[in-house]
Length: 201
Image (cartoon, rainbow, N blue to C red; front, side):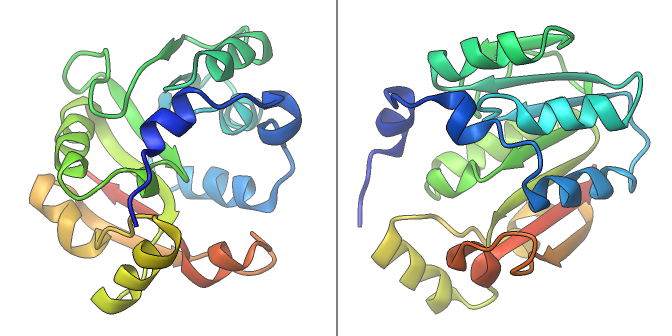
């Protein structure tokens, strides 16, 4: 099932605060806890939306520099209002991060890479490996068997990349995969297929 997700998200017209600036969603706490695994001073989120994750990270980890990018200009405009302390917020794509090599401690995605197909994901992971200094945290969909990943793509159009296999190809190691529970994300797709994946580089 093919959907042009890039076009859909670039042109998406919603109330970004109402729909995406939900600070108390349980999975956001899971992301903040995973950050404790790393030493970091900077976090940059790819697909940051209205900035809810970055707001929480800045509030919990005092002194951490946060920034992000999103394909939707209205999302970034909303994030700029919500995050006046952010180091950098810009309109951009996951495969072209405007930072120098090894310039950001942690790169984060939250339900972003599931929209990127198997050919472009290679470019995205190369770019993430280039920019990340210490590691990555991905809140994404995954299933261990290929036919399970295929069925989600066939019926929903989402790409479930084989994270344990693909990440080491781009220099990531110490890959940790944590299942998202129903309490952490009540939406059925996420408590069935949702995982928090982190890795060092």
